Length: 329
Image 1 (cartoon, rainbow, N blue to C red):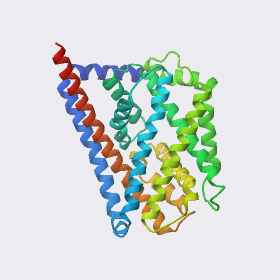
Image 2 (cartoon, rainbow, N blue to C red):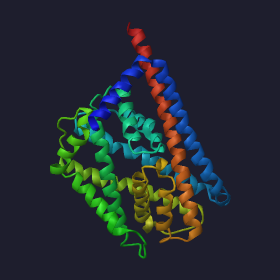
Image 3 (cartoon, rainbow, N blue to C red):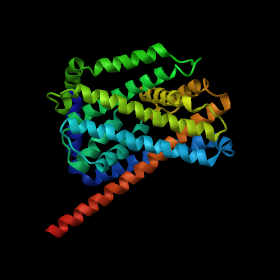
Image 4 (spheres, helix red, strand yellow):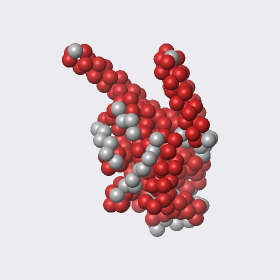
């Protein structure tokens, strides 16, 4: 089955290369469709959140928006370090552009579009042709991020009591991710999954680096928790600074649910439902509902802004490279 899919994919690539105008048209249509879905998501959330935001404190909203942006800008550092350990050296700018250009692909149903778009962006921008290693790094990134989110959430329960959460399935999911990343499991598993892309042997990350990245991703969830804290403050709730780890864990649970809900564009609805239920442990229904809507709105706005910045930066870099080659010739 995998070999058949690979053959069809290669045939499609050859066809697109033979018809460049059709390829550009399809790319334009795809980008327009993604942007339309994002605009629909923003419009729908804004219609619900607008009345509640009418009395929100703009200072805290701006702080939460800055924290959401900081989460994305910091998160990419882990992937860059991971690629470096596997011998793929890229700059922060290139990594960020690849991440952001592929970011909005998650608004398409299915879980394969984001890693595929990121690998393609990295190939075009930096000439990285080792697609199996790039895809393996994305899988490891997702696994470590999920494990760290579960860790932050579970530890935060020492400060926040009365949380109605499916703790055992959540911990079980984290343990399953940890087992999958164990060197004896990861190497044959990655080789089997990525064999259709030409993978021969992918070495696991060194254990010290894995632990370092795990701690790093725990820190990124704290940044996300700070963003949710500012959102709560913007609508008049004050759960206390001690709840930031719990709020970060809540964001992590929402992100995990969004990834597992592969048939929902960017986990629309699934993420909000999980966050709303968990936020009731630290606030009332009104602020909890407002924050789930504001969180979706801010995530989409930041992704759109970074996507636009990534596309502009990519085009400027291509023009600069073309100008340099013209001068050299």
